[in-house]
Image (cartoon, rainbow, N blue to C red):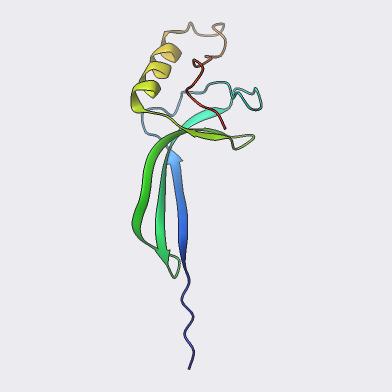
Length: 102
């Protein structure tokens, strides 16, 4: 009798609550498509998540899949800039250099 056990890691990502409406320009593909996500990486045994390996916030591009870590303070700054723009003509928010990259 042979038993096969599969171990590995699994990425669980979802939109960050409270930042669903924040979208900024991607420095990689230059589209207005960066969204804030929370990313959790789990150790899995037979495809069942057992314990978390890492947990952090990221900006993720929905088009080119470029991702980078970002702090909650930086996300708050971007959200405040985004909410201060006038409706219908303010243009996209460009986060300062160093917020994201490859």
